[in-house]
Image 1 (tube, rainbow, N blue to C red):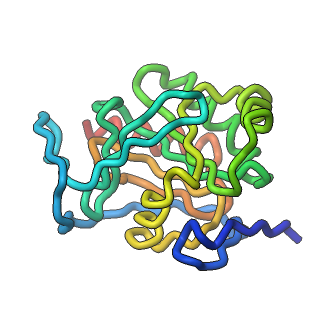
Image 2: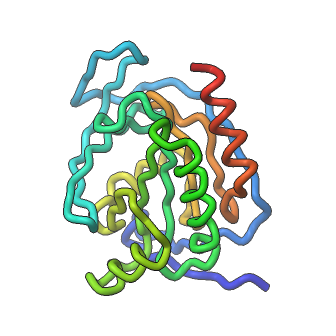
Image 3: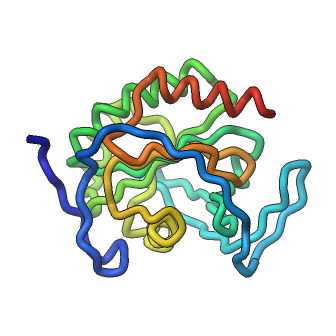
Length: 201
């Protein structure tokens, strides 16, 4: 029987949340934006408008994430790239199993993709954060869930995420192209999904 982990209820409006224990699956999301906008950008890609969040990373930098209506997120610092957006937990065994897969894909696709993580369990101490970065070769931005409550709430409201970990999305030009909500994603599945998105560009 697979182990269950609980996320702090404050992260998603006082709901009890558990890690994923179901069969892997991917879901393609197609929806339209209807949120009020507080930021607008003009690029060759579809118009991005929504609430912008400036969030600190555990590495000491900051990253901007924009809620793009109900179709996804925009990452202005990484525009033009495919984003692997991973919601994980420091004590989630399935998340740990997924990390080498994400690192392998990141290395293989090189400059064409970027990985951004949110650590959604209780806040890590600096020593725990440092150990996790080192042990799992994490060289991409990681944000603490306590600092990203609005982003996690957006995931719950828009994608009906209920705290299952890991929860991984593929995003291009502000639009979520695929989600992998249950039990993590395998290498071949993730690679083929990225190649499918690239073929549409």
